[in-house]
Length: 306
Image (cartoon, rainbow, N blue to C red; front, top):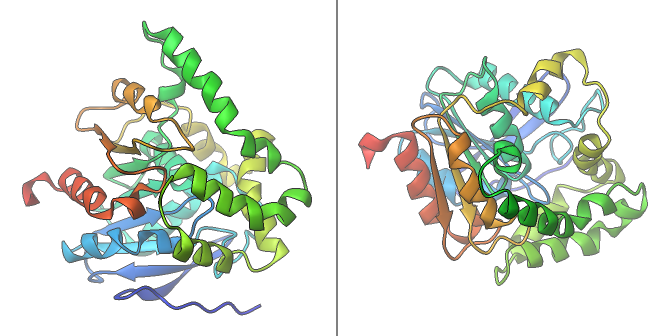
């Protein structure tokens, strides 16, 4: 089906033809600026970057925010693969089309899983990485003296992540998204008015095929098989130590992923990295505190410009 949408103010709409998916994206800023690839999560869409994107563009970045594979108006994946390695593969494919040695990647939620993996991938083309709301794997596995704190965090997180088990149920979870998605937004970002965002989210899920596709992100994670050859090394990198300088941002009132994990991130990051908590923000911090987030991102990407 043909899916049309109106771009946010000041944004162009571009098409990115990749090997296993054709992605539609919003773009801000000069064509010759350094690529700032902005990756959204679930349940979300490229509209999530409508505030931060123009701020980065005003500083000369070519900001590109795709609807990731499975989210309309992008296509579903031709190979049916939605593991993190496949998402990293798409990000590297976008870099091949638009980027150079100045490129950076900024990810939120599932986009953060992707950017975290790229930060640990030895052949990543991105010079710096920003991840929001989902920390690198070291935050969950690093052995420190405060083992009790980690056990407590993991136990509570298992309870908070109940939805990951629910969406494993075929057909039932697809039919339940109309109620599940607003519930998650309310719980994950308490007090935030998500009316506009929810409209954009459901516009990105117009068919049962799209709904199944975006739930495959979770199903591929909890029921992993051997990744296809193009994704194998990328998928494995997601469990390695971060190599690229990384800024990690987390909302203090995040109801999806506990802010306490942010305390454990710094020890697993390379020199030039930073970790910041964002006050007055929950899970969707780039929407709740866009100016604060943009300032932190710009300071990290180019400290000399601040």
